[in-house]
Structure formats: structure tokens, C-alpha cells
Length: 463
Image (tube, rainbow, N blue to C red; front, side, top):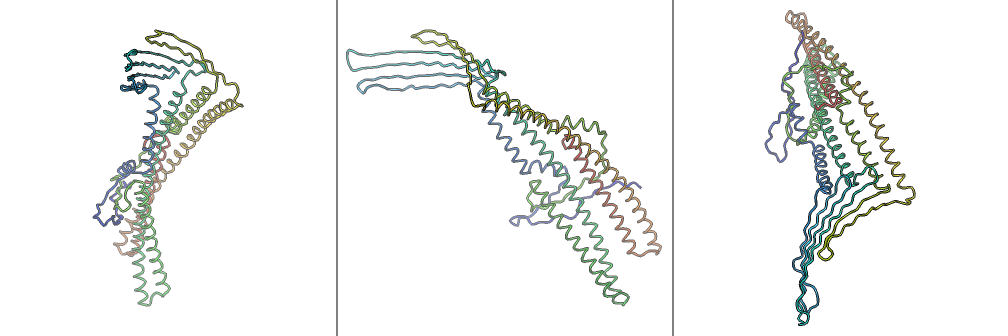
């Protein structure tokens, strides 16, 4: 008979005292709630998010260079000159600048000067002068190619780096989801193991009582009693060890979730569970992984970053040709135009420039090779996870058949016990065997779910 596995709210609550002796509240967590709590409370994720946020103002500072900058300077109360005279010289200056992606720099300056002198000497009297000047200049980079300003290349590199960090954070969150899933199922399995070991402890405890009665009736030896006591001691030790391992796993899991380790937690399984098959073949899985995996996108961004490094190096080291022009106007000299070509040629640097370009070119080539390797490794990884998932699915079917067999065997044993053909201890052994088969099926189901989550992660899907 095919049996649908039903998970109940788990026992084995971890009762730990809270800090400062305050009253504790039991926290019940399902897998979904555990993942949500981990994404909100995990310290590593919080640190990574903080580092990502720290990059945003840095990029804003770089972007500011390519936005209009305007400043006003006022000097309204300036007194200068000898002590026996009054020289009042207020000034005002308005300046604006703009740097563009294509290497054009614009600068506008407007100055207004006012001068008033009052001398006590009768022959000099008063002197008043006003002067206004305006200047507009621009510089356009012509060579080398690409005709892009070095500051803009640095900005592009920062934006690429930000995107890389964002992708890395998303990958870290997905790894955290998978780790929470695996640890959650591991705790469920440990709790089921404790249930089974408690059943075995109960059985050997009853056997010990039987042996004691036989010793009292002189139908068993002291050695039989020692063997029975040793079995009870070993069973108790196995229970204690399992409980200790569960306690450690739970404490580590709370740390993973960012929960106070002293908080009492009840880990609650889903109400019902059946393995969900994937309607996907191996070729489709590999294609999906190559299209979605964050490592590939991050490596492509790394290639773009290396390309920017190469362009930046060439821009800094290669000969350059700039066109400069402008217009200036003063009240005294009126308007004046000016234009010039500025050609800069580095004569010798001992080969350092050529070496920098070569180093950047090799780095770019290496990035392309790394991309090829990542794509190959991802294909192999997806294939391994795909085959592992199929093995886990087959194990579920075998475990289900085994459970059905032990269930039928237990039904027969109960009928025989009612008929008096077997003892209560023999019936208890059948119950333990059936319980073991149930736990084996549960292990197979949880292993399949963990393998399924790992496989989905390898496809680049969000868990």
C-alpha cells in the first residue's frame, strides 16, 4: 500500500534558558520561515549588504564629475592699501565646469571687480573703477582611441564592480537558502533518529527486566544480566549522543539564522510532503544553467572590467592630441578668441608603458579563458547534480517499497500476537523494524529535497 508521508509538528523541543532569567516564548519555525529569518538576520549577509551600500556614495562622487559644477565666490568687504587712505575692493566670481564622456571639458568664469579709493590728499581725491570679465574655454580630446575621458573609464569600472558585488550578494543569499534547507532537514532527521533510539532503549529496558526476573528464578546467569545491562547503557549513551548532536546542530542553525542561541525553538516540518519531479532533461538543464548562472555573468563583467583597464592604460600612456579653444571678454580689452592644438608625446619611460599595456592584454586574455573554464565546469556540475537527483528519486521508490513490506509484516505480526503465536517482545521488534523503515523513507525524502534544491541552485534559479 502506497503511504503518503505526513509530517507532524516535531517533538524534542530544545528548552534552553533565556538571558537575564526572563520568561521565554516558544518560537515555531517552518523551513520557509527559517529561510526568511536567515536572509534578515544572518550577519554575513548584513555585512555584505553594508559593503554594497558603501559603494553607492563612492560611485555618486565619480558621477558628479560628469554633471554641471557651479560655484559662486563673493568678497563683499575688502579694504586694502596704506593706512592714510581707503581702498574698497569687493569682488564676485561665478564659475561653472562640465566634463563629458567623450573627453570634452567646458569651463565658464565670470568675474566682477569694483575698486573705490579715497585719499585724504586734495590732489588725488576719489578714484572709482569697475571691471567685468568673461571667459569660456573648452578642451576636446582627439587621440588616442577610444576617445573617452579617463575619469569616465574609471566610473564605468566602478559601475561594473558594483554590479559584480550585487551578483555576488545574490549568489551568497542563494547559498544561504540552500544551507538553511540542508540544515533544517538535517535537524528533522536527527530528531527522527532520536525517536528510533528511544524506542530501542525502551525495548532493551524491558529485556533487562525480563533477564532480572530470570536471574531471580535462576533461569539466567549473571553474565546474561551484565550483557542486558550493557545493552541498556549503550542504548542510553546512543540517545545522549544523538541529543547532544541535535543540540549542537540547532545552536549552529540558530547562528545561521541570526537568532539568539538561548531562544527556545520548535522546528516544524511541512504538513504534507511528496517529492516534486522536475520536467527537465539534462540538455535543457545545462542550457538553463549557462544562461542564468551568476558566475558566468560576473566573469563577463570581469572581462568588461579588464577591457576598461586596457583602454585606461592606453589612454594614459599613449601619445595624445587635444584641441583647446575659448573666448574671453573684458571691458578694457573687449573680446578675444583663442584656439590651439596640444600634442603630447611621451619620449621614453624605460619600457614601463609597453609593459603595462602587455600586462593588461594578458589579463584580458586570461579572463576569456576563465569564462570558458567556468562554462565547462558548470556543465559538469549540472550533470552530476542531475544524475544524483535521479538516484535520490530511485532511492525513494525503494524505501517506499521497503516501508510497505515492513507494514505488511507488522500487520501479520499483530494478527499472530492476538492468536498467541508470538510474544510481545517479538511484536515490539516488528514495530521497531517498521519505525526504522518509516525513518529510512523520511531520510530518502529529505535527501531528495536537499538534492533537488542543490540542483535548482546549480541552474541559477532562486530557491
